[in-house]
Image 1 (cartoon, rainbow, N blue to C red):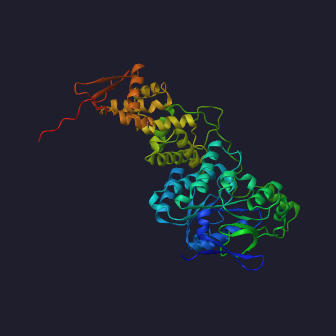
Image 2 (image 1 turned 30 degrees about the vertical axis):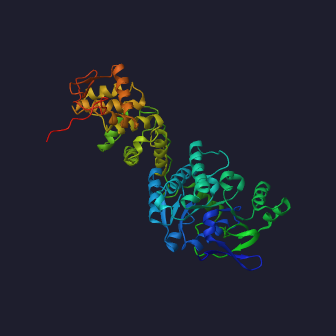
Image 3 (image 1 turned 45 degrees about the horizontal axis):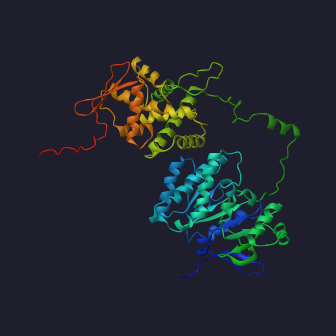
Length: 507
């Protein structure tokens, strides 16, 4: 088989510096260099030279590689999606062998970590039939695989670090070859960096980073000082895909350009101090005079949450805030905001697996998408989200206007949060005289696969006087709602009596 060599540039003796692409796919690559060392330039050179030979996915936190879409046909995937949607997109990317750029520009670090993790996990979990060779380039890898906890939430760090570890440790068998770049080795998780067998080390100044770079290349401490003297675009290469011994190389030119580059000096504007002060202290025509004060919301009870959902669907303004000292928001802006939140929640629940995912993970997906849409946390804390999720799982969208239904809603608030939706599901079926939901339906509304969980919920609510459950002569179940004349029709529980089999219908 013909060897595919990626042209990196030239060595110190003027000879071509090449990298074996097939060997790279088996052994992975780590690039390290301080800001301004030419690390992104090297990354771009490798990706450009290999674009025609292997499928690529570029995790781009700064939007520098979007230009690949015009020159090499990469599809730009904007990260303003839910993590579950990103996972499904990643699976289709592997299926159709598309080269893509995941653009994370403008997102908070925590959101970037969540989106990158969902995308990488989608690539990793693809069906075995689609395990084609694929080069995964992750720029600024210390963001996604930090060596220690920072300002981001522990859950986001854990998920992101797990995805990066899977890429570098277990990705080879699935055809995934990690190529990661970092400004500082000390900030990159050791178990991620240690899985790379090829290294390109650029200019480094801090002793701890020089020591780690020298250790990876097999150099002594005296030789580690050479990293301080490297010029931009010069690297020391080592690895089975590069060279058996450390050699200095100079990276060649690139065809595309990123949005950011080396700073260039330019003349300051010629303006008097008075004119400059006027520009600074006077608001422009397109600037708001004042910034709106942040509004803090307390968790809404189930009844008020149902009223708000009903108002939004009817196109009316939401209910006024409960605290008098809070500033009254713009009704139109608040209605638009709630419409965005409703759409996010609807997309989240459209996932067929949403009924069985842990509430904490669903809430994280919800908050991530709300931040992407610039609506904060959607006005729902974990307790409020849990109640609304229970309502959605129960198929109860909005509150009716009659007093009997509002009384049922009030009674539901006395139950544990995760049971309220199940109780309302039974109440809705009883009010409509519909057949009693089966054990499987009740369990699904609760978020469980086990039908026995549905039977437990019925027993729990019956023992506490919320419902009355009876069985007719055919063995079908009928549920009555306490305090009302609502009663479901006969419905099968889905549980078959031991030792019995279904009767065969006569022809």
